[in-house]
Length: 460
Image 1 (cartoon, rainbow, N blue to C red):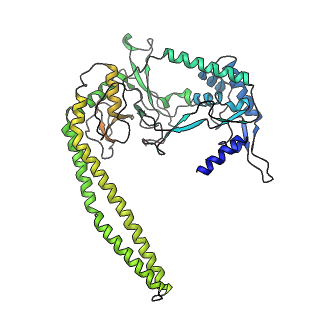
Image 2 (cartoon, helix red, strand yellow; image 1 turned 60 degrees about the vertical axis):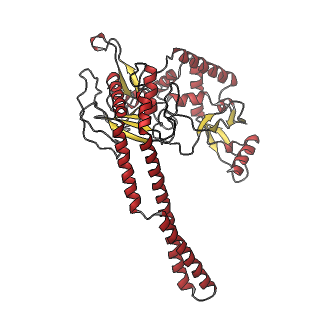
Image 3 (tube, rainbow, N blue to C red; image 1 turned 180 degrees about the vertical axis):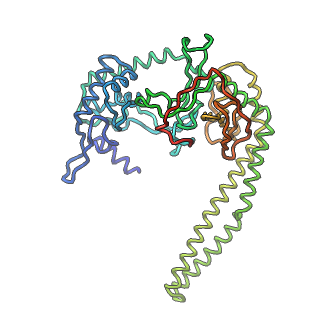
């Protein structure tokens, strides 16, 4: 890996585009030829014309990212993957890519320590696979590689100044989190996030202002005019009250949590009892190693032939590998048992540290408590599942503005007391603590018309 990294750095300094990960939209990558011709970017005339239009709309006509996306849809221009709709993040990445002005950059991103997240992104693991996060590097940290230019540098500079101005205006209009569960809700079917959406005054019933949590997958304009999900929207006030009541009910009865963890501890102990203990496995492994050494010595001294030696040594090798796997399982079971024991010992302290703040009416304090305790809220068509997390670490304090509960945790799923429709009795794995009957939705809840779910494969 180190030699590969040094080789890529050397190739980037020499101006070799082969170190880049493919060609962006508007170019075609030509790999190195057998006759020694280096790799190069070739301009795709059709895609290059689209790139020029996008930069012209954003830099000269001063359209926003949403305006550019709508203009592309109106003209029927498909994306690089052949989709009828473009994503705003895709357009933003194109407008920020210096390759279009004739200078591709190697090293635009870099790795850093894992950054805290409210919840995992769509279709990604809860725990980072590689143990690091990827962030954008400073503009001066990259290595420039000359490539054919599609636009001039002045237009590229104008577009980036416009993007910076749009960013400043967006931050000025931002008033912080407007919804209690913002960033925690996710659709249980398409796995896109739910977001808060206020009902307009003209459509509101009774003149009262209220809002709903809305699935991103039901927004047709994000996916080229076709919705990928038909999940229902949920009234924000009802979901906020229900989740907060579940938090209070969970922490006001720590004995139920302790009982659940003790049950898991018992199950882990029974499972480890069925498996051979580590000492006996170690003894069997030593005996096999001694027998294997004697068999090799016998073969070396000519006491046994090759036909007898090969099958016996193969059986011993397989047996040693099986014992090694069993030892790993026993070690893992022991670690899980130790972790569960820590959770059982600290559950009362954890509940006591949080219960003191449950009577607060402060919106920010409630939000901090929910972000510390709730891992995610999965909204299905006929039920809502709240997934809690309890950190087995030593720090159980909850301070406003702190994120001390990120990291490895053991979640607990609870069924909510409210579901958009009636419950269907779908059972979760062995993480749920409560299962209560659901109630009917509010009469003023707005329903989407039934559509064909073309982009979802059902529950995941």
